[in-house]
Length: 120
Image 1: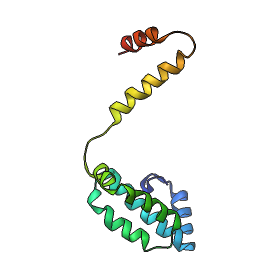
Image 2: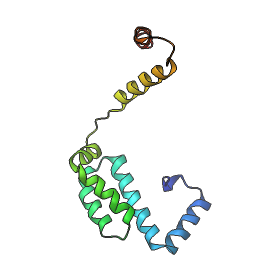
Image 3: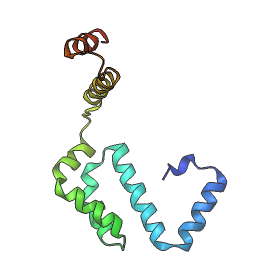
Image 4: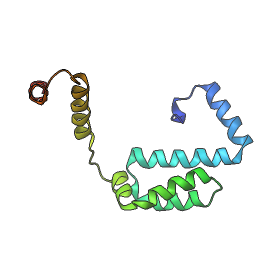
């Protein structure tokens, strides 16, 4: 599942052997690589084409993935296209939960509030 550019020669040869032996694995590799390309280069406009291609192959696990994507396709397309990220907000939530877990059973809410304000 790593980027093929980061494989050493033995891993690359082994991957080639596996994909030539099993056509389903070759198709899976292609679809996963295309989806990773969409994510890294923000090509959300290609999502519908990619989903149609996946549904054309006999890969039930990816069919299930596509079904999940279709449930909220507008949000998925926006996430694959727009440059906005909720990373900073998720970082604050993660920090808050970590502090809360560290103080579990030791103090009341006032001390937790004071500690959170002082850690910024």
